[in-house]
Image (cartoon, rainbow, N blue to C red; front, side, top):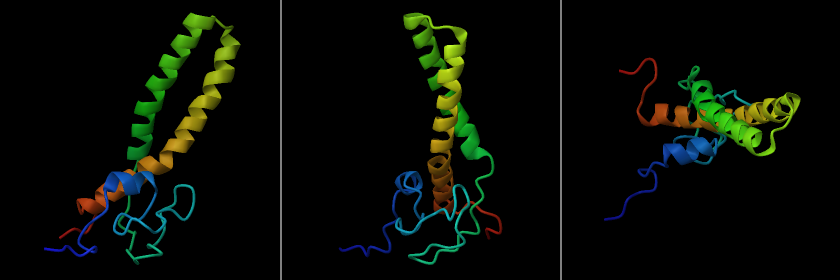
Length: 123
């Protein structure tokens, strides 16, 4: 028995991390940095349902904060730098990691929202 490729949905995690359309896995999900496109350029999926709210920011905070704290504690224990060195290291690192992780996390939440049909107006 052969399955049609249209019946096989791409993984919501992989498509989200790649910031691709949750239905076809090919079209761009975002038209800007965090602005979800109106529709998929490949399959035409209407992406107006996508509203991840503050979820991506919360998950990014829960991931970035412990990583930065562990790294800061390690650097402090091994090298014992002056306090201003910690500021020079960890403030930019926190910003870079947070800004880099927001789009993929938002992509995953939008893809999961599509996969589970969890949007307003659901009948």
